[in-house]
Length: 282
Image (tube, rainbow, N blue to C red):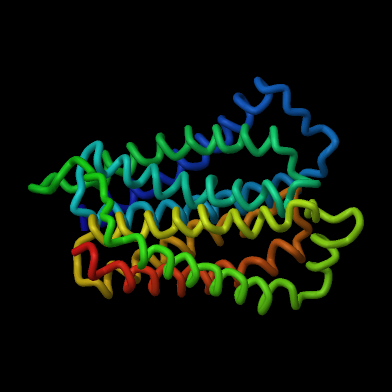
């Protein structure tokens, strides 16, 4: 009973750290870069706070799950958690937004949010590692992983990512009325001249997903089925939970249309790519 209470208290502490660090970086750091947000239509404060709380709970639980099943401890675990959170929540989104949200999400603001996200990721990574990391005989450093034998499989995995990415986008959000108009109309969010670049940018996006899958499969405990499920949940929940919170970038209709797309596609992708890389990394 005592252990359960302590686990609950530590989990609440991580959620609080998540929310406070997110709000403070937005309130204190963003204005330092001269980003003017006064012209933007912000969501109602009560809805924004509820969305942030829900997102914080989901993402904190995912990081805690990784920490509890990791072979790493100390700085190695903190680095893994920081990388997973930062890449999925911020780097992958910015790569996409540079093209598909170019007209409504200024590049300067994207870079500031990327910097803010790095700060939050580091704080969360070290906090979760300290509170939930194993104290047993596990490694505390991450090895560099690469082999020439990965070149051809990597190309096949990138092609697989393209297939899943395009199928998910075409089958779910683009069939919702109003989503196509948001992106493709004359005053839409997408810079149509950059669409070919946007497709090419799926190569680095896919590569980052693959790297995360490789490191999670290598440094998580359990059989491949357990590790692939954790990887799939991580890919799915970290990215999709951001859409639970209202924002000034997307109308609710568009935001919620993307939610099932990312939730199901990333879960499927995470499990599949974990299965693909398992024979290379035990």
